[in-house]
Length: 139
Image 1 (tube, rainbow, N blue to C red):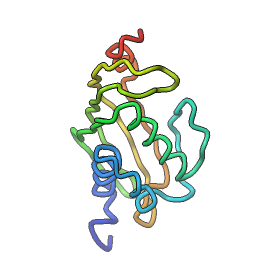
Image 2: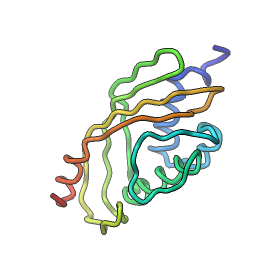
Image 3: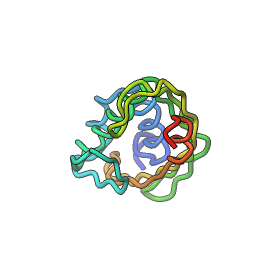
Image 4: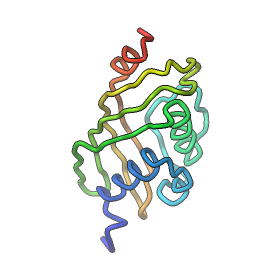
């Protein structure tokens, strides 16, 4: 690989910290491919490609303005990187049509990204949505 910016593990770290945790949505254009393929279902998000990724970040950061992802561990092989994260935040905005509860969430999630030409081009993942919904008092 030419430099650290093309290393899948470093790209995953940048996306997690800079876009998700720090809320620097403008970096989506730099770090996510235009024809991005998403294998994660986000209710209410109909966009495709890079616009879909941007919309998913916006939706979660609107619902949880203090949204934070801490990478607990990550691995990379070839053009892919996987992370196991701790997600925290306070529900201050609408989430999938649900009104804000003001409650704090703390749950784990896993995500995998495939990279090409220094950009994320495909994503898989899941989170402990049952724990999140329970913490929000919705189940």
